[in-house]
Image 1 (cartoon, rainbow, N blue to C red):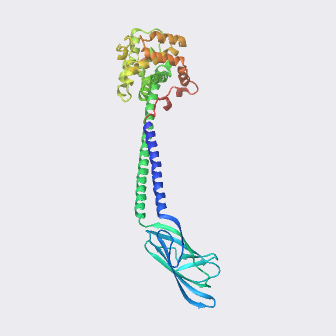
Image 2: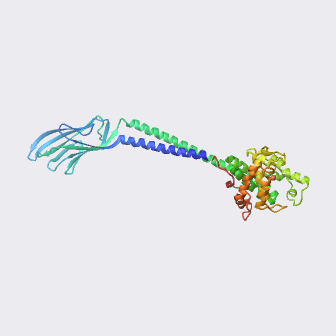
Image 3: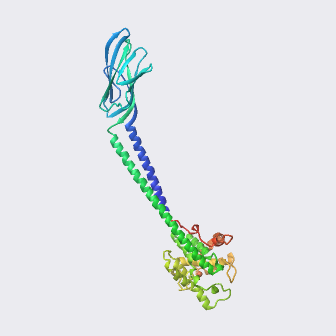
Length: 419
Ligand SMILES: [Fe+2]
């Protein structure tokens, strides 16, 4: 889970970074290549500089005189000495009421009383870099008209920078696509893995519940015992600060610790009176039987050893092998304490459950002899702080019937760890 979150966070940050880089370069490219620019300059008959690289040359020819005034022709040339094309341009020249516009050539013109607006005849007439365009206009000039300024508006289109820019954008686009595809592949694999993992977990749960049903069916007085022991044991492991995977294994070990009871005849298991030596031997043999039954379950670490050794005693007087102290596997020591607590706190065929104080007294009496003293400390804490009551409430039989005896995904500690 942690790994997946880290990958997700990394990919999200990388994605944001890529968007920002792309946006930065696209914006820069647009700024460089497609600027709306306004050029203004004083106009003279010999030519005027409109911008750093844009010039106007104007020549004036007086063609004929008449009683309407002087027909004057202006030849106007716009020279683009820069390295960018000028497109969608419009040229405006102040033009007072007096003079009368007669004719224009190569451009369209409109006259609104304040100026003449020269427009290219077609939208695709561009003032290309290094080239010029020219047009002319004829006016009846009563002698008072003196053109003084000219304004050109248009868009500057880069020709030299655009190739590099386009390649850059294309490269970023390719990187972006590769990134998106990779992300989707990772995501898809992660979802497929999660689905498979969930299915595996479902199979484990169903197998476990089937097994627990067999164990519980043997001894109705201990119904729910397996689940409660598993929960107490997992809580002890948690309080001991074991790794999540270990806590989960302790839980499974608690669930299956009494698997060997299946091999014990019902009549002996449920016998209310005193047991004969032979009968006691048969019951004690459930540890060895459980160990043998769970040999195949090697994928769940410690489960077999717990079934085999959960009745060993810390002082070495337990069974089946008389292991002592830390020779007894840790899970078996934990489950041994949890198992004893549940036995004391539940009604049995031969006695009623003990009180809280009696149980604590028994636990402390057995500390260092029957039980690992460190583990007893955690169990006593769990009795005192009420954790055991929460478990009992959760596993109490009610209308829900067998559902309370069966484990669900929420029960298993750290189940989705690593997903
Ligand atoms: Fe047992």
